[in-house]
Structures are given as structure tokens and as C-alpha cells.
Image 1 (tube, one colour):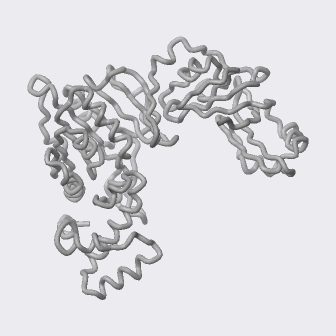
Image 2 (image 1 turned 60 degrees about the vertical axis):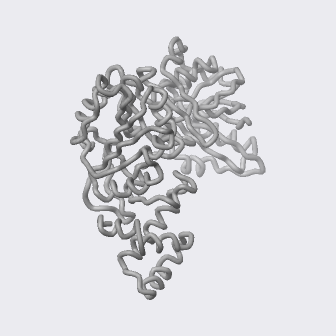
Image 3 (image 1 turned 30 degrees about the vertical axis):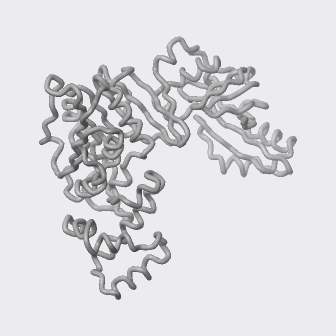
Length: 408
């Protein structure tokens, strides 16, 4: 989409056309496009409006009903922060004393909207003219927020001595310009040296601000965490979506942490929770009891020890994120199972167990084990009226199979 086409879509005939479109239906899109062109609408405008209709339908998952009053780009929607997580970003900056946020690399404005909604003054910029225009549109309801086209490198953020309540938020582009795929998305990069703005600039601007936050890929390496910052991995409904780095006044607990988010709650797990945790791994002959599987954000942050301490248990194997304990404990950021049996991994013995228990419906989970669940299912040949869930994993360095019973 060109800046000129975006301008047509945001006002006049384009805005009216977009507002009049029915709920998006992929199967009816071509027929609708033909009808609109036959009614005299420009082909480019029809294509742009239908693209927005499709993106709005997709964006409901991230933005709810607000998606239908927003504009999007394909890459922008892909990288946009979920509203539940953006609100946490805004709350952290607000509670750090921030009153004015400079959003450098604002994309379509997902975080900027949350900042503005929290009452913060927002100056948002994006180097891409169309993306900046989309962000400007998405911020139109907030008088204290604005977005315009400018490179992050060219923005002057006030020093703490000039404005102690000014903070910076950076979401470096993690897609490389070039040929798009069939869905219109460009290639994603996971390398720090390919970020835009550069990783060097991100560190320079962040460290020189009173408070700063940077949204990075969840694959961000522990070894790259700058001294004195807080690296916070965040998941939503079990999927790890980002690693946010917090600087200075916003770095409340320097080190590694995790935030587990759903529509109902947000729990934070801190590195210090793991201090003094029992480093020993589990033993197969002591597996009866309960099994706790840490949320992926906790595992990605390297905080399995926090779960060990929480349930007073032992990790199945180092870094695997699954802990056994005889205690029945409520841990909001971990799944819990009862363990009914545990045996060394052996196809013949496992097939006998499946046959003896007349298992016909078998769920096979794996963690830290090099097995193909479907191939294993064929080898076990489940038949019978009963069902079971098994976990193929490592216990104390050796492959094992645990028979699980889900708990409420």
C-alpha cells in the first residue's frame, strides 16, 4: 500500500467503503470485489479496503472489538503487541514515574495505544511512511498521543536531567525488507546485528534514559543481557511472545524474570525465587506423586529452579522445566499432573503396559526426548476401551516414561 492509497482509505470515499463492508468472508471476497468494481469503485481502493477487512478480522484475536476501528499492515499486525501485554508495558512505565513516552519504531501503534490509554503522553515515530500513517490513524482518539514518520536515530530523547519523567520504548524491526511471502509478510530475522534501529543504538538510547523498555524476540540469549537490566520473558496462553528488556527506573529486579499472561491473570516469576533451590534431579523410583510443568516463559528465562522451590521437589533433568513432588500445590504458572506409574523407556515394556491396561486412546507427550510420537504410537499398537496420557522424557539423564493423570 502506498502513502497516497492509505490517505484515500482513511477519509472520504475510502473510509465510507471500508465502513460499509460486511464481516470478512474469505470465500466471498472475490465476488464482493467484482461487485464493488462494477459499482464504480477504483480497483486499487477496493483491494486496499478488502485487505483491511481481512486484517481486521485476523486482528480480533490481539485487539478484540477495537480491531474494527483500526488500520493494519501485514507485517505490523504480525509483530504487534497483544493488548493484554501492551497494558503491562504501559503499567510498568507509569509505575516507574513515566509521564511522557517516546515510542521509537512504533509499528502500527499497538503499544502506543496502551501508553496513551494509561494516560501517558506519547510521541511515536516509525521510519516507514505507511506504517507511521497507520499508527497516526490508530492513535486518533487520543489528544495526548501523536505518530509521525521519522527514524529513531533522528529523535532526541530528553536526558534524565532535563525530564525525569520521560521514558523511551523501542520495538526494533525484526523483519528484513525484501520479497514478501504469499501472505505479504517479509522475512523475519533473529540476529541482533540485523535489528533496525541497530542494537548499539538501542543500548545507547536506553541506558541514557530515565526509564526504558525494549521489546525483543523470545529467542534473546541470556548472554546478551546488558548489565543492570531486567530481561523479562512473557508468554500468553502458554506461547512465549517476547523478551522485554527494562533499563534504569523501569528495571525493578535486575536479572532474568518471566511473566505468564492470560485473559484472566498475569503472574511474574523472578530470578531470586530460585535462590537456594535444590539442584538435585529426580529419581525414577521416587516418581509417584505429582508432576509440575513450568510455563514456557519460565523455562525460557531459565527459572526452573523457582518451580523446584515452589513445590519443594526435584527437576526431572537439568533445565527441562518439569518438576516432581509428593506435594499437591497450586502453581498458577505450571500445569499439574498426578503420576500413576513410571518406567524406564523400553518399547517392549511400554507395549506390554498399554496392552495390560487395555489402552485404546493414547495421548503421547514428550519433553527432552528424541522420539517421534506418531511412530511410537504405531509401535505400541494401542487397542482397548481405556485411555491414557504418557510423557516420554528424561529422568536423571535417562529416558523414561511417566503415566499421567490430569488434575483439576
